[in-house]
Amino acid sequence: MKFSSYLGIASLSSSLLLSAAAFAQQPPNAQQPQGWMWGFGVAASQDVYTDFDNRIVPIPIIGYTGEKLRVYGPFVGYQLFQQDGFTLDAQLVPVFAGYEEDDSAVFTGMEDRDFSYAAGIGLNYNTGGWIYSLSTNADILGKFDGYQASARIGKQFRIDQYMIEPSIGVNYQDSNYVDYYYGVRPEEATAFRNAYNGDGALNTEIRIAVSTRQFFKGMTRLELGATFFDDSISDSPLTDDDTSLNAMLVYTRFF
Image (cartoon, rainbow, N blue to C red; front, side, top):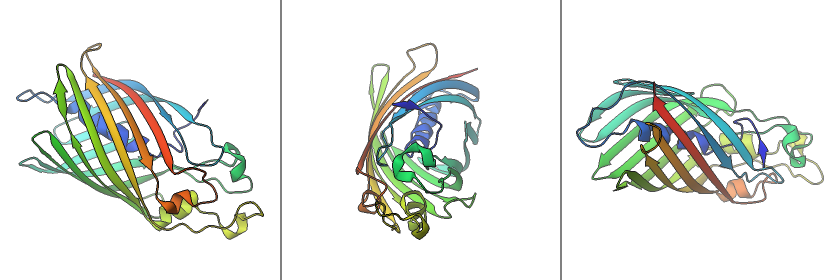
């Protein structure tokens, strides 16, 4: 494994958003905390790119939770609507994906693919411990000029001072996203790397997270997950697998 920048950790953004939501969550009838928070964490992730080292990434966190505004590092959410368990948010989210030419021999002679930033909306419905989520966002930096959309269902179980949260979801990445991050342009093709034009991909994700406030007066969250990639990604000449495993440990605390 190697230490690396945030680039390439495709599941990190959604994991951090889930951690932010978990930190803000309180027991029934409790006052939701507001104010500035700080924290740190570490994320480990496999990558489906050929001969690409696993990544271990330190995560410094500074955030803010207000009545409607939530800032969690580079993630920004603003509540537009809330009623009867439904919450609609406007969101700004980073797109942690991409690579540099020297990350793997498979990229030799290719242009770097950059991370980006996206804007969108998210709809959540919380009832009886079940959480249903829909979200979509589009590139606003002109890197891949596409969009993503996701749907997720999860269930919360409280055991003493611990919250257990298994979930399953699907994530759609349009053809522009797949072609930018997994495609091979005609001028990048070689005898060992065919040109490849990616189609839209529907990926499946499973996760289980454990959260607790037992340690150091803050929120500690451990999350384990796996992503199963669509054939449009696994058939790329840049990849050699269709499954990625990841883990993340985060601690956050209000000032």
